[in-house]
Image (cartoon, rainbow, N blue to C red; front, side, top):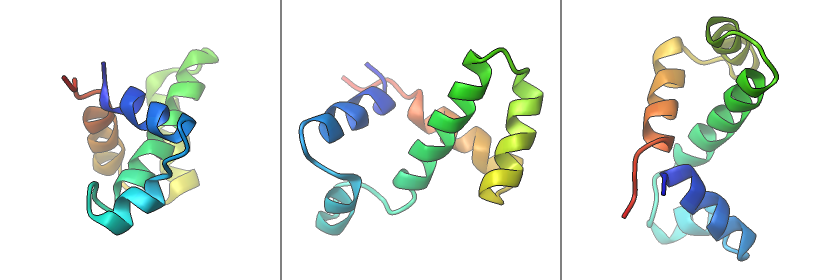
Length: 80
């Protein structure tokens, strides 16, 4: 199971990321990383090239490519 799967399961069970941030269980950037990951994943699933998806994500979220790649890496991290 990946981190993104865990976060989506927690949200499905009524725990929001805002609550988790307030309690200090996750960092404040995690919400942004989750949104970036879901956005870019949706673009790629629709057939857009990864390069174009990254460029579109850069423009939408106004972040650098390194932030996007970091979000992807973190969200794909296996959690046991």
